[in-house]
Image 1 (cartoon, rainbow, N blue to C red):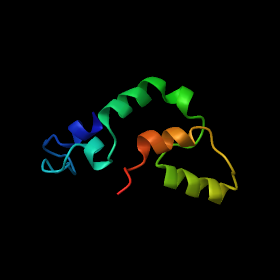
Image 2: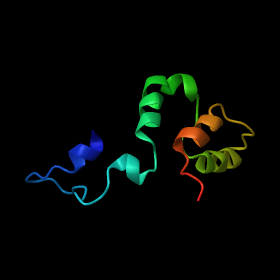
Image 3: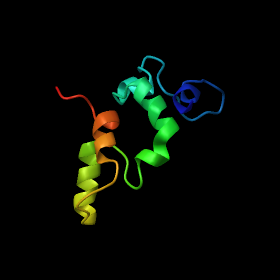
Length: 83
């Protein structure tokens, strides 16, 4: 909804999302089915940190955490596909 709203032009609005940009889930490389699943199950899948597995691991390192609940779901649903 935020992506859609950001594409709307209206007088006095400071910025818009370029209509030529692909939808947000495409830009983030998140499968729409995965996004729907996460919306329905977010609180049961994640307890603290959420993001790409790389960013979560980096945050854990900075925080001195050795493990975070939900890292596998971060890998499965929120990390870009391997190239």
